[in-house]
Picture 1 (cartoon, rainbow, N blue to C red):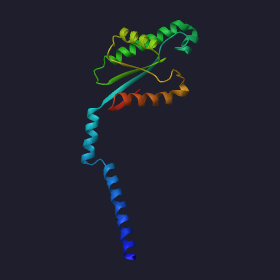
Picture 2 (cartoon, rainbow, N blue to C red; picture 1 turned 45 degrees about the vertical axis):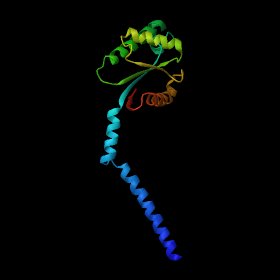
Picture 3 (spheres, one colour; picture 1 turned 120 degrees about the vertical axis):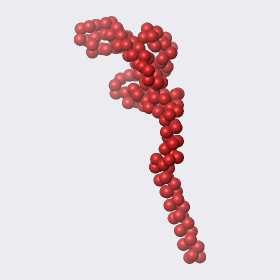
Picture 4 (tube, one colour; picture 1 turned 90 degrees about the horizontal axis):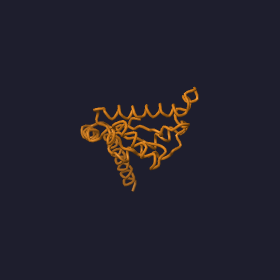
Length: 164
């Protein structure tokens, strides 16, 4: 009986060692796991994500508007900057998945953003996705970015890198 208990303890110890060794080997970039990881990266595409709220008077570039330019002109500046950014990144020869997360997240603003893409000559270059929330205060930025990261990775898997 003592011998049986001792053997049982030794077997348990050996099982534990095998389990630890197995986990240690899979965590190392061995030949097989390195090849699997490299194949996944080759099959994946990086994503460029732009978060934008529609440029409207009183809601866009408010500090610029308060400096004396006025709300309407500040909204036009914001619109021109957004159109320029969309055009510039859609002309890039780098193969990336381009995603425009827009707010407010409704169908009317989806149409307005489609018009901005047409103005930029970027139709088809960007995928439009509504933001999950229209609350774009800077205090919520980390939650907005985390949500955007999860949604982009879920929709366009496999995505190797997401750049905001």
